[in-house]
Image 1: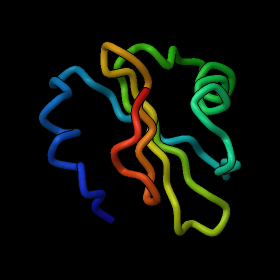
Image 2 (image 1 turned 90 degrees about the vertical axis):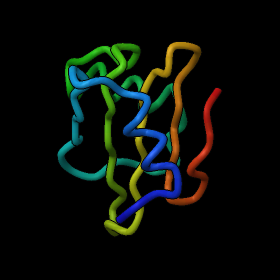
Image 3 (image 1 turned 180 degrees about the vertical axis):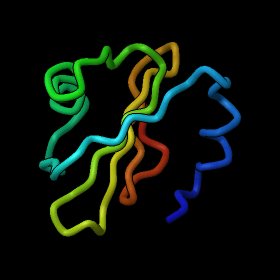
Length: 85
């Protein structure tokens, strides 16, 4: 699957960026704070580290990515690929 902003995503992150995939199913109703909390508890990582965190929905037809871009958290999804605060 390719998100519309995937080329931009790859250009912004350096070679030291890790991509973390959360195992299992994630409640896709979660927003920034809920996904950031899951990063801290389930993955034992810091959501503001600059790494990319990927979450999968129950049906497998939706994913959300979460990362810190230096100004705030970004959460593109298959529904809204450009959403950052």
